Every structure is written in structure tokens, then in C-alpha cells.
Length: 110
Length: 114
Image 1 (cartoon, chains in turn cyan, brown):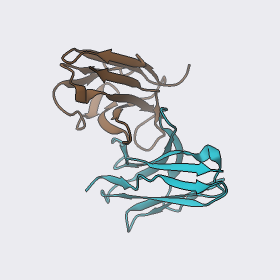
Image 2: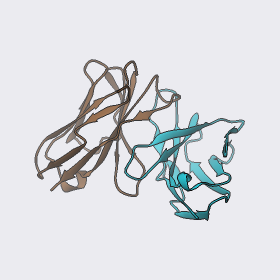
Image 3: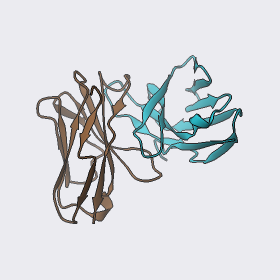
């Protein structure tokens, strides 16, 4: 089983739609969780950290379910500029590597 | 600039040659990561430095790959006897203190082995 698993997509949604991505992780001891965004042929950039209580940043909401070992990202009112690959990232400990999923590609259309 | 800098941005080399890829992290960042990314895949972990020492090198695929960070700042990824399968984008990232803090990526070095 992969350490971090994501549906690769692509998810094709119209502007204004709500879209959700899930990610599962295998290491139950994992401590930190993130969503990164990667545009085509660019480097990944942090979108948001994921906290146990869930967190929201504008149109983006991230949630963590430790019991089921999954993380979700919800994007409301999708914009064309949201088109990118969204990478789920897990850190098993405070001084450890970041493990990336393969990414979920989102394409927002008119 | 103040971001992570990687050089060269592109490197084409012949099979069997030796290459060095350089990463200049954000000043003051103690943690440095190397990843490689193939088309359609997420970044694959290679090695993680905390200061000068390699805290985790479990991702290095074989002994042709080696990385150093002698003064706790700039890092060099070295690949000996390159193979066509080594072709990928090699990404470097740094963070202030390690796994709980945001990792900032450089723009990567696109390595092509012909």
C-alpha cells in the first residue's frame, strides 16, 4: 500500500462548482498534513496546512479524519485559476521527510 | 532573490556521465529536502538534511546517488553513471525547522539523460 494515496483525476468541473478531493495515508502515527498546489511545469507551493479541528481559508476547507486516516480538501465556487494539481502531503514526525501523493488534477472550465 | 535557487535549470547529459545539481536554500532554513518528479507523478522523496547531516536518505534509489550539505546551507546532489531512467525534474525544498513548517520549493532542475 502506498504511504499516501490520491485519486489522480482529472476532475473536470464548471466554474462555480464545488469539488472535493480525498487522500488516505497509511502511517497512523503521522503528525502533520498539508495540501500543496502545483501548476503545470512549476514547483509545488503550500496551499494550506490541515489541522485536527479542520480549517478554512476563503473558498478552501481542509479536514482531517485520524480514525479513518484520510484528509479532504473542499473547494467552493471554483474559479478558472483553481485549475492545477493538488498534492496531499503527510509528515510522519517532526523531523522527518514530507511524503507526497501523486496529486489530483483539477480542470475548471467555463 | 529570497527563494530557493536551483542550478542549472536544465541539464542534458549522456548516459554514463556524472552530474551535479545544486540547491541554494532560503537563508536560515535548517531543513533541506531533495525530491525527484516524473511526468504525472507526485514528488518522490530522495533525501532530507537537518543542518549538515542527512537525517533520512532512505529515498536514494541506489549508490549512484549521493548528496552533501557540508556547511548546512548549499546542497549538491550528485549522480554517477547516469542512466536514461534518471531523467526527471529534481526538486529541492527548504523549511525553517523540518516537517511541521512550510517547505518552499525551488523551480527544479530538469535532467535529461540521452
